Length: 288
Ligand SMILES: [Zn+2]
Image 1 (cartoon, rainbow, N blue to C red):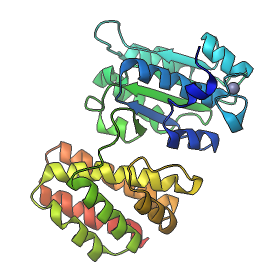
Image 2 (spheres, helix red, strand yellow; image 1 turned 120 degrees about the vertical axis):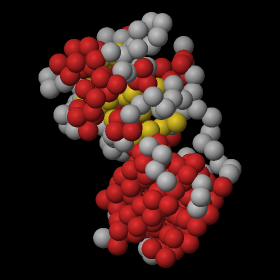
Image 3 (cartoon, helix red, strand yellow; image 1 turned 135 degrees about the vertical axis):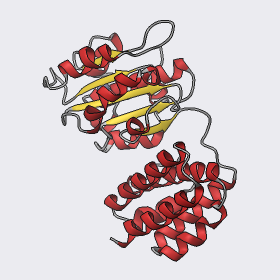
Image 4 (cartoon, rainbow, N blue to C red; image 1 turned 90 degrees about the vertical axis):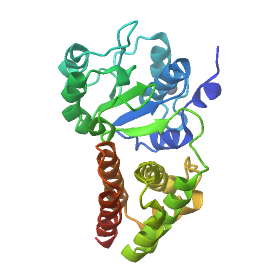
């Protein structure tokens, strides 16, 4: 059997830091990687959220951890899609999750719902889940596990904090350099710097989208920079700088702007529009 320290290695370290600091986002999306690892990670995250030893969560030894291991913790509910197609229908969302949502936890501080095969949710199921994902009761945490994010609605994605379990996040490529330059421009606080940094994105919609995704990663790292979580984006310096210069509110607002841009890009908006939204809306956020 795996020891507790082996077990905790499966949780991305930034997420682990957030859980221990008691600042875990209420809706997590674990995306990519293989089925077995993803399943194990989702369960370990649930264990960490329910563990009685905050400092060393998941300790693997307390009563809560033991119950999670045995599959008998009353505050943990797990759901998955159908056996072959991995489809998650609206009935699972309604009857499995929404119907019990407001019932207080039994013995832990919170309740955890794991949804495996989250990308198998039908459109109907995703729409039924939206409002709850945005504002669950304060004692509820969602851990969604998905092989990829393509089948998830942008509105669902925008309500989750995504951790990529796949290959290491791409560190090469133009989008990294441009995202890093945009991050530096955000920290410098000027629209002119943003326009300059975004210049290489002209006439390349795909690159705008990829850069927006990468910049989200840097901002996510910036949000946890004060708790000394390692930067998953590989842009430690930029993340640290942004963490110092921007308020948490500004970081969240910037991430919202990027989500909008990714949404527009997916709807085939033209790159001029994307670029002007990127520079103007980000500039608005840092001016506030
Ligand atoms: Zn424990």
